[in-house]
Amino acid sequence: MISGWRSQEDLQDPPREGELSVLGPRGFLRVAYVEWGPIPARQTIVCLHGLTRNGRDFDALAQALGRRGCRVVCPDLPGRGRSEWLKRTLDYDTALYLATLTAVIARLGAERVDWVGTSFGGYIGMEMAAKANAPIRKLVLNDFGGCVPGAALRRISAHSGKNPKFHDLDELERYLREIHAPFGELSNAQWRHLAKHNAMPAAGGGLRLNHDPAITLPFLWPFIIDVPLWHTWDNITCPVLVIRGAHSDFLTAETMREMQRRGGAAKRGLVHTAAFANCGHAPALMSKEQIEVVADFLLT
Image (cartoon, rainbow, N blue to C red; front, top):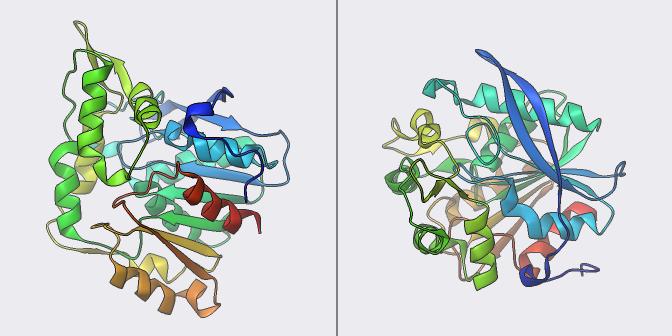
């Protein structure tokens, strides 16, 4: 059980905000992050968000782990949240994201980190963990795995490349409740939290979502078939927790079973799994049950 766990409605602790400069393909860019927990700490955890999301998705999980003595850092990838947008669409690529997270880890001064990645954040975590001498000690893949169905990518691309204008925060929240319904049964306070931290002023008044619509183009438009990532998964040897939403179209039950059978981590008996009812892609990691599963894996 998590000592000091609180519900989303009770979250009061403000995070520490930080920024750093990361060298991209056309110069340096500003990358933002938030963090909780003591500095220094014996255990450092990096939480990385989904494709169009940002680090504030992890507030509940980060605070719970921070109260257990962990330093928890939640970056905004370039083009999201408080981080800088890029001028050239094709610069939003895996190489940039790996460089960004390498710089974040270097800023933290931690030789080893644990990684919690939701969806796209799980993909970046897999890519990093598969590298030789990777700094990842334990890896949590939240609804992401060794093969991504093309149908799921097409579903996400239908809305992720858009950034409509909203009159106010209420309208923006209603939009998020619709497109992110697979997150599961969130409370009103939790939906409001997501809306507040996904809003930015729009030109001429009103609000828009705080991500660059161009971030999706390098990853989604070519994919009309399933995307296998087994060549990456097979090279991961650290302990892994694979989480699946029971109704997910992004991580199938078949793929999760295959991840338990093949690859370096599986051969060493280091692949653990968890499935959560009443949600799809991806579990929000805001409920007490979901936070406990992640914390038990990371802190044991």
